[in-house]
Image (cartoon, rainbow, N blue to C red):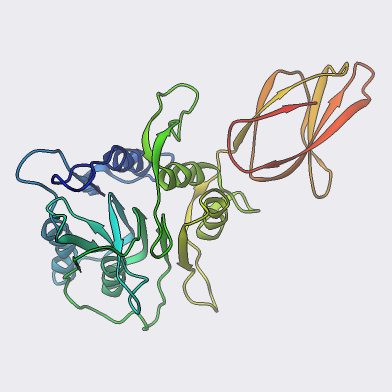
Length: 326
């Protein structure tokens, strides 16, 4: 996890990149979410102190340790997460799909960067991880003199079986920008204070808790749909592995999207029905109340004291903070 807020004079200071890393780490190590052992998480963030860090070589050195393990019979891991937040740049065509995180020692007249896609693909080539997830919450502009590199050992062949699933999430399309804002806590928006965050990171972390497919699982595909609905300029690519026997990346089971319900028009109770087949999924209950539902189309019915439906409202549930009056 690499986050850089602090740069030399002449390159704008950010406010949310380090927060983004810390928030993603919260998801990673939470037993009911990412479930990683904290000892397996490398958090590398800027501090504003001199000399400026992190450097590209420091990140490369961390990744090279996995190549060292490959030479010492390490059996490998389930999934590798690469998360980069800060300023970003892209290469001009024909390499325009390669985005780089601008490192802390960059200068206005020499923008040094680490190519995230190259790092992710190199790690996938090792075959040491069954899956690789890359997140780049940074811009993808083409700008000024730049040294955009990533030096890792060449190891393996990505075309060989088995084909390994991956998910690459970029906050911005080629030559586009992204934004950071003061946003609610993605896990506890009602109780935790707001903080500066990348828009992509906030949406991603909400998606990693609620963006379920029809089975109730959060997968690369359902996460892609959730993020693209909220971040118009993002770029997301994924592969579920061998087409003849796909193994989608699964990030857990949805906690459900909270929907706040209140009553009107003489209703004393409400129920919730599936918006496609109209079956009741949450029986009659009093309000005000909060129900949790997976993303999709739902019907909310108000019910009076005689048990008759007083009104219905169709609601498309995508993100939290929805208020329904029936």
